[in-house]
Image (tube, rainbow, N blue to C red; front, side):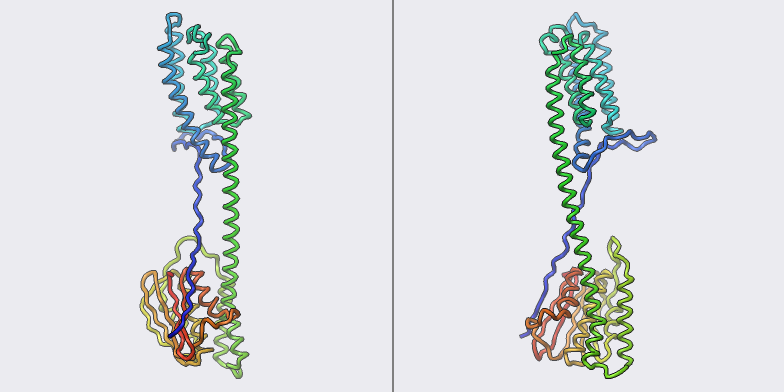
Length: 410
């Protein structure tokens, strides 16, 4: 009973694609896009985009809610004109604010203008809010001013958001007639700025960690590609120059011969092609037919008669080249070691898959007893197929010949 050695395929690990969120994008039009707040990384960009929606919700929701409260809380002491005009302006500004953010993003200009609008309303609150509510610190102007403070902190960096918040605080304090009444707004500003700073710091730290991981993976992939290229060059050297020199040293050629000249010329062409091969381009490789390539590999043997049993099978060009190289190496092993003058290459396959068997009736060997220093089977056949995403198996025993099977996909 023949023994077999099969090397399983462990395919490459695909790198996860990163998706980077950005700020709320403006619609396409003839208007020039406003300058956006720059973000440090994907997480910071996602926070900035979310801040845009949060700002819209605060301003629109606040305008509707506080307009209703202002109307309900109004007394005969409040002039209808004094109340109606500022509230109408607040609603119109809130609608424009939301439209502008949706169109141009959460920019510093629109956020600072919003702070100015709210500060102006706060200054005029003695004409908008009953005096008793101001005295009891139950005015609806305080939560309205808080919405402006929140928007400033989530939209702007501290060096700009905090000074702008001071303007709102001063406007509110002066509007009440007692500047110290703005202490709660000061606390809200400090708390909001602190929370946003913590969140932004965490986002930047997460971006740094992700960037470090991606860079490490990139370096690993580059090293793997370098080693794979190095292994392929070693395989090509083993299959060409070293193989020819081994045959010469073993006395396969007693003197100058056409066979040696032809083999040396083939080796030179392979090495020249290896040196000038362009880097693999992205995208799927075109399918190529195995049949002519296998016929060429069978014709390259000089003292070995190769019988072909082929069916049409198409594979990606790099995979087809690797399978043909495996077939060539297997045939050279038969020619050098099997003590047989005939071999058979059988193909089963179709579009996108193939199983190729190379068999002989030579002296055979024990695959388990093959020393690690023998690279022919381990690298030039098994290693090639694993690197191509396929599978290789060798079945043989002394006196019973050898069958090498390569298949793709695994």
